[in-house]
Length: 242
Image 1 (cartoon, rainbow, N blue to C red):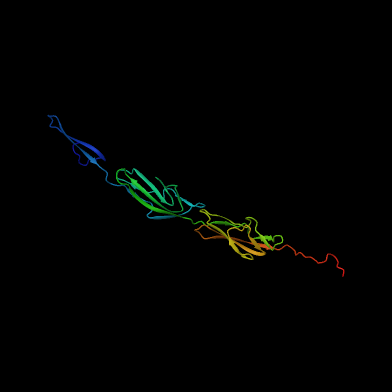
Image 2 (image 1 turned 30 degrees about the vertical axis):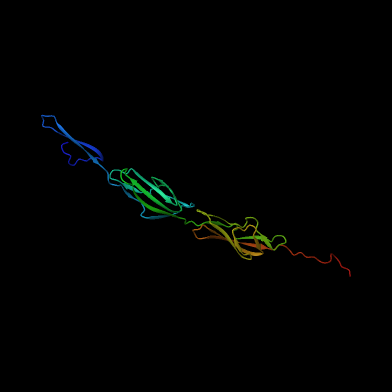
């Protein structure tokens, strides 16, 4: 061309050669280079300003991200060459997309980094707090009442194995499963195996806790009855002569 006014130079090194001719003599030239450098860092945007709260998924102790809800976006005057994340805290890992990533219960810091291959990478970060809002599920082995007879020659009944033990489950884990006894028998503990129940009605209350949510309970009664008649001995077998 004849003028470089308004000409767009691409990033990199371009050699410019000018030629002048008077139409008679050999043209004469001069040249130089134009080096265009990118000094504009990318612009990055995180989808969360500071922190976002999520509850654990049903029956799980984790939260799985939905679509691109935690993915950052970035732009650059030339091009974004990489957009990556790193996770620290309750969850660790790295990659290029958080779609479908599983976050553990607790606080995880998400740091996104964008680079254009030339300038210093730019970052943005936020936290994801995953909370357990699911209470334990507890099951008592007896619906309402269990009837037992006193053991032979005794006025009590001794529980056999786990017959009166409750069970409990939790999405994150049961931290305690305990019982209390009230009524004709009293006491507390973690297993009723071998526990001695007095004659009468005892209320058994089981409590399960996951360390976070409200304790859940179930209860039933154990009724111990005396079905053993007295044993009597007369001092004379049939007749006494005097």
